[in-house]
Image (cartoon, rainbow, N blue to C red; front, side, top):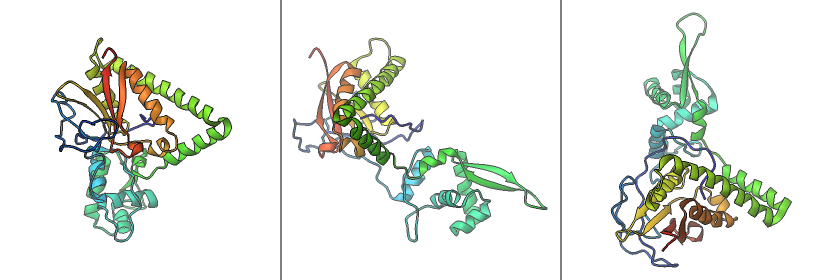
Length: 294
């Protein structure tokens, strides 16, 4: 279900995910799918329930290098002896654990050269993750001191899933399943209003169903679901989520998935049928979208 947590603007441009046409309620992989650029979905494709590239694949060092460049969240464990990490990542953790410091102090903390550390600090500063200020210490020239910005917090581990689950457990203890259902329904209405407003702002009056699905897929992508819209050569439209951003909630609370299905039908004004489901073991949540008149 679409996330209602804030997300970084200008997220990473992910490689397009592909999928192959599901063959019914129980889908077996067929042919190798052909990648389709997100900006050009008018070429028909077929896709599988078990679609490719659902997540970023890289070493830990490559992930932080990629994500720092795009100033987007990264959750990683604290680097330890022998851990795979980049100097940039070590600099981030040194500032987080040790506080503001001059380049030579950071270099001492991470065991690297001052020149190498300074280069990383400047890159992080350009990305808006580190700030620089002048500090005077006795006689002599002032020195530059670096510290993390609030935006850098998104690079460190968070546990929003556990927080959400604890809230839902408390809600259930107060009002049982009926209150849980009311909460998810209220959330659906909030998301419906948000997405409908986006469609109205970004699409022309009388926009086609395909245009609406593409815009909804873009919203899903921005909120962590790796959303993609694809269209077969016969005109069949598919809306896919290659990641479940609330998997910690959708597992114990299946109503989250029920509400998502209803949400898509309402905002698109279409008949929406789920053909593949992450919570049921699929590689994506994939929906067939059809006009109501069909």
